[in-house]
Image (tube, rainbow, N blue to C red):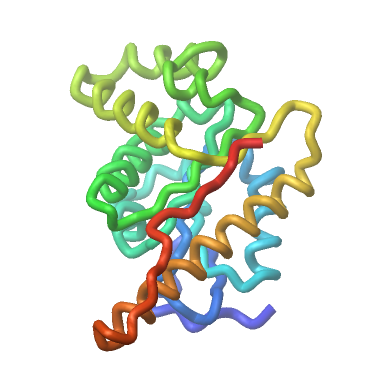
Length: 215
């Protein structure tokens, strides 16, 4: 596949693709690398590339590099895909990214699509079951301020309408559903951008929110 013309330095440890070459409609993928990078997320990335969806994914989660560039990428993105899984809350970086995503979403500068990968939304929202055990294990080595910020982000993002994959569901079909919803969100944002570039009397009503029905 032909690489997109990215305005970001090529030395960044990233993968990216494009949809209509709109860098400002970038999709930031937030996920637990050790658990999903070489399985579910690799297939999702392939699907995004085939559909020319402009996305960002960190390739080197565990190499101890300065992660501030990830927060810059979140700021540059218009959509965030948060993939909650059983081991998600093991990662301090996943939770820090999530807190940043929540902050941007609260300002209406970022649309968040939560994805529940073989984990219940309630387990994420209230930090219960295996997800919760991993969260509280990490919390033991974290500050009260960090814990508060993470809990608020988990509760806020998991409460949004999203997509859920059960233990016996087809991952291939689930990826198709994710791609469909992401493309729809991107298209709505492009329509809004186009509408706001027109004179006031030529603007049409554009829906302010994408409804993603839980499965």
